[in-house]
Image (cartoon, rainbow, N blue to C red):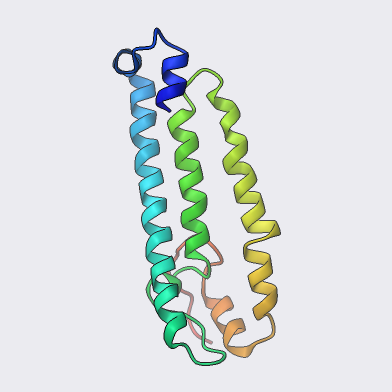
Length: 146
């Protein structure tokens, strides 16, 4: 971000952001978005790492963030990319950066992340019940047990 700001100003990054309130706001909001995604991904990965150490065959992680999303770590990853885009969107040419989070979101949701893991678990009764009550990606209040 700093290098791009310097390239499209007189080289004084502090002046660039001091004179561009919109740029400052987007940088701050983007950082907060990125930080939120980082925290979600880190917490989810830590919960998964601890679970894997003690899990029994066929057991599914359904506590912590995993109670609210089947893939909270992927959600955090996607949010981080959107935060990065938000940070650079105001810079000249920054709009082109939208292709990064769009591509990551597409790949995780439709190609390599979620679909591969969901196919691997498909048909397992405990997984199917978990799938019915738990949001695929965005953490959300779990549905009711049937």
